[in-house]
Image 1 (cartoon, helix red, strand yellow):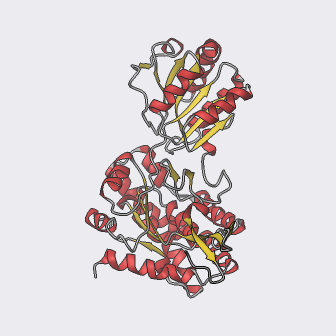
Image 2 (cartoon, helix red, strand yellow; image 1 turned 90 degrees about the vertical axis):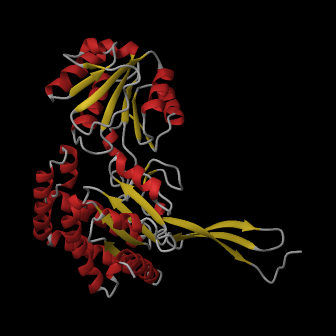
Image 3 (spheres, rainbow, N blue to C red; image 1 turned 45 degrees about the vertical axis):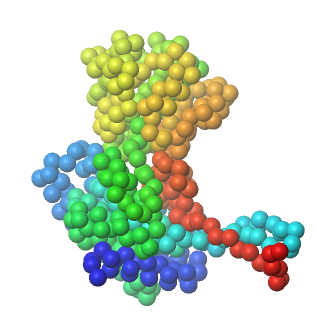
Length: 415
């Protein structure tokens, strides 16, 4: 048996043991995991230093290094996310009554785990803790295949979680890390149909496309985040400025950061000079349409078909539109179904924006940076689905389950 097949089979076997755990036991394990992460900050950071040293040699991008970097605050955030999961309802076993048929049989649906989830990710060591905890509470085994840039950090985090699993006499295969980043093993992993039930890739566009093209297992895409802020003609200018600066500069190398600003022409003359000053003072590079370029100092002027970039740095695209309809057309063409924001004081316009725009999260007068599982009350997230296979948007506990039919009768047979 190969290494990958052994890992997949062990994870599938281990997942069956979760069916025997009640919610209270699962919560006790998660509480212990959160505590153990806080108590093991030093060894995790030591492992992360090794990854960061390799990242420097490999000259990884600033965005990737930001995602890779751990510190005490970020480890504490991992723990806090797990503790939030403890307080959330356990979806496993929930029953939805569908009523009774004329012949007397009773129909209901029970929420059940997916089985084994495989995470394929790049420089995000926090995925190890987030995915491990989410899959554990939702009754799934998880296989984590991180890129070589995050391997030491992921192994260190998994080791802490394994200590807790062993303390509760549970198999460590419930949270499995592929210890070798060899691409050939990745290919083999994606062929484990029958042992792995779902693959979720998190990373750059190249990784997402590679997994989608080569997997024999269903894939939920966590695609790039080309997130727009649309400043409506009836926007509050100060609110719009705050949303712009927070969304673009609070943390740049993440998928819920703003990458584009779309402004109604009726408010452009009032808003854009202030936006230009605020962005310039924060060293944000501007890529502007011809109409908006007059408000900025030395912008790169974009043609109409040159929008849609995910910059992941202090850089943004700006476009002026004539009306709401043109804003819809721009977002539909250049967005990535991730997160879209409108700033407006007109409730009718806000409602129309939320109804029409096709994105997994559509916000009114709130920063795009809130498009996050923790911020939306999910505790943690295993990814933000930008496809529509059973889940759309931040994926929490319920997104890691499905439903089976329960049918109860009293000897009925079909005529």
